[in-house]
Length: 163
Image 1 (spheres, helix red, strand yellow):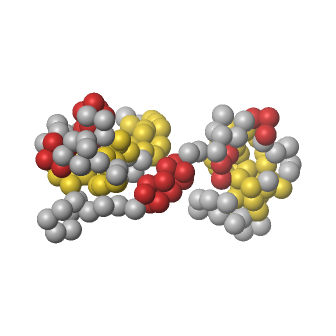
Image 2 (cartoon, rainbow, N blue to C red):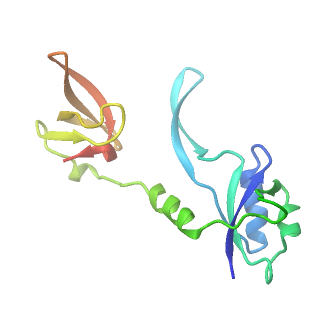
């Protein structure tokens, strides 16, 4: 029976390890997030692993590759263990991570009307009421919130608005 395990990979070699493990018919998963970073003075969206150097793998060690084969794959350091054997993870954990990773895609047609009241459901302004002003590209919008009796423009991801 296939079980989920946690691997520790060599720094920066998760992609290599994933490729070699998938060649051995091992199911691999490592969640990635999109992070906004400043590179050479400009803001860029970069995709990074959510858990650097860690990867979830699913295989049946009795039928498929053995623990030793997986452990000696290029890019892999070792299994996360509790005692002598690798720790078996609950599948619910991985499936909940996978379901949380899928982003909500809101198209421009589904955005609120200019002047419509919206709520902010994530981020530093979570719970604040705002007024929709205009879209800012495909994934963000400009909202007006009241701070100290003054209307202030903020930029918010479209997925963080509740309307």
